Length: 222
Image (cartoon, rainbow, N blue to C red; front, side):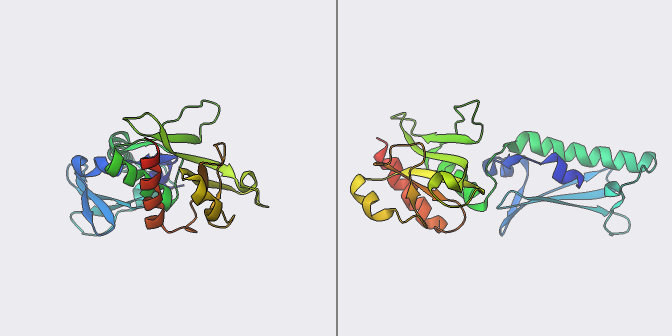
């Protein structure tokens, strides 16, 4: 495992913090550039919209990529210095812009970004024994408008033990009668099945449709 993957393992980016830290958005990526080891190397850190982190070191004198810091060798004092400063940059970014993460799918990341932007809502982990179960709630009414969990498909009545990320949302009972199809929309897991339903975050439901349904669920949580 590369050092960058080890440092950011199980970490979840907070996109709202990146620009303040110094990242610049370029198309679908956020890019941070700095110099390390007495400005001998240019270090570039890129984060895509799924929260994946990539890095590149370039030797200023040769304009060539530097790779020895990732090599599985002891090396000398100079390589050790490069590794130390390289990791220090990444750890500082992790501490400032990341948090311990559970949900890693692209749709989960887009949902978390959306509810922060629209409703200033953050995941709340209420159950110590169920660390991969979280809720979203309105600040004014204190009512839940969403749940996010990692569960087995079997818990949704499907013949599959694979664990998936899901979101639970509110709907009017009369709508649920026509909505549940056990393909795209499933019964509400661990919630009142007359008022809640579940979506698997596997692109079976387009993200824009999920966002619209989040808006509806938020309104129903008055």
